[in-house]
Length: 353
Image 1 (tube, rainbow, N blue to C red):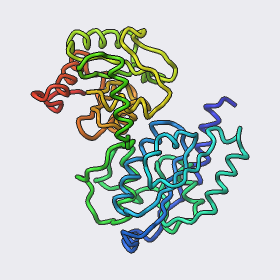
Image 2 (image 1 turned 60 degrees about the horizontal axis):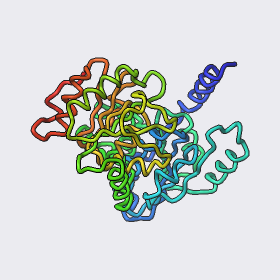
Image 3 (image 1 turned 180 degrees about the horizontal axis):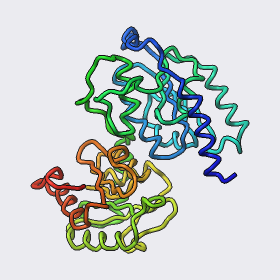
């Protein structure tokens, strides 16, 4: 059986079992927990991808705001957690499941067994569309279990990182209106030393005092814009922003859609990459893990969307925004970048879709 067909069959089976999972019937009783109590929270998101793990950070921040003395455990796949959550002091234990469970079954069972020995006050599915997230919530020894929002309401956000925050807050207080709630953005919690290191890298790459425009020309599959598209975009960036450095951030694959014509930077250290982006004026790149990494910094992130839905996956917070390149020309994109870089223009004054 082809892998795609096998995965589809597996998802269907898991969905059949998880559709019966319901939130704990104690909705609203989270208010009985002392806000200053040292409660233990479990977030489940067995996925190895960079973006999907970063998308948990708004929920992690929300839990810490609601329960300042809480500690948080995570169920993830792969080993990225040691990098992404190294400066989240309240993330205590991470159960790193192998990326390919059936090839590393003993390790998979060992990590799962470790989880079952722990007790939690709250367990939350990090993605309500993820069957594996729900299964681990179900298996956990938690007093309160949150799988989804329970009911569909008009104030439910569309963005994927906001879903679990919404589910948590509506479980905490079912009657609150969250239509105007300001959700925390993605975060990496870079240290001052890391940020300074990022600036030093830019100083070495560009021996000048100009600000930097950071571009990321790669993405997987159809999300990757063509070489012709990026060639035109790069040409206009150079001609329109002569007072700025242009840096291409290279992917782990070490490929470039502009054939390495710009000054470029390659690193396998995600925190180092983020520190360089942190010191850039703007980041421009397609929907990818690197886009989400940029969105976790304080630099403005412009996400380029031509396949996936920007209302679900686009960067948010600050001046971050999604650009639909199917309906936005490169010339219009240049105007949007100008509006970000020059305070006399405001990005919201321009149409992107």
